[in-house]
Amino acid sequence: MVELNKGLEYMATRKTSSMKASGVKNPAIITDGCNPELVKGADFDGIFEIPIIKAPEIIAIPKAIVPFSKMDKVNPSGFAVCEYENDIEFADLLRNPDAYVKQFKKYQAVISPDASLYWDAPFAAQVVNKYRNHAIGYYLQKKGVYVIPNVRWGDERTYTTCMFPQPLAFAGVEKNSIVSIGSYGVIKTALEKQHFKAGLKAMLEYLTPRVVLVYGSMPKAIFEEFEKKATFYRYPDWTTFAKTNKTKE
Image (tube, rainbow, N blue to C red; front, side, top):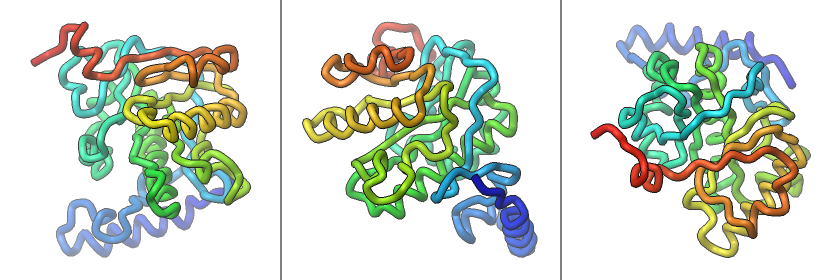
């Protein structure tokens, strides 16, 4: 864990002051896209220096999970907001998380973003998306939103030490607490199932979470052998949920 606050504060101050003169409302997008102001005050984990999302003092279990693009269709009470959907559906959150802080506070929890870690993407791009997921998760947490860390892995490069001494997928997540994972849409093929199960095993061993929220199905072939490793809570995907529950038009 390293402290980079002074450098980040300098970057954010210098960038903002120079760009404001040009009338740019969100200078971070124009300059480097990494929004260093989001992680002011953060602690950073490991060789990838991923912002740490702190484990909550009290583990709160949401009664349901709603995707970001559908959150206006439910009564916020008891719901957690997730981003287990196409990245374009929550692009506005990635661009301007501050615009959603007030709205997010109405919900029981927000699961940190799930910008994709595509297997066929360059590893550098996967690191960028992992960083961005945590930068926004940390920022929302700092603003008073109850944040549950999302854990997403791709192929073995992200959940093993075959390339680096620390698995990228688990960086910035504190151990022995609550995490959320998404199976929806990512366990269709044999290879997808193989990587998902191997990543799940690695996650349970590395993070030893007390509670795991699962958005999507929990096939026995993948989950059964891990049932005693943590307490799992399964949540249906939005399509399934909307068929059996009343939602707003």
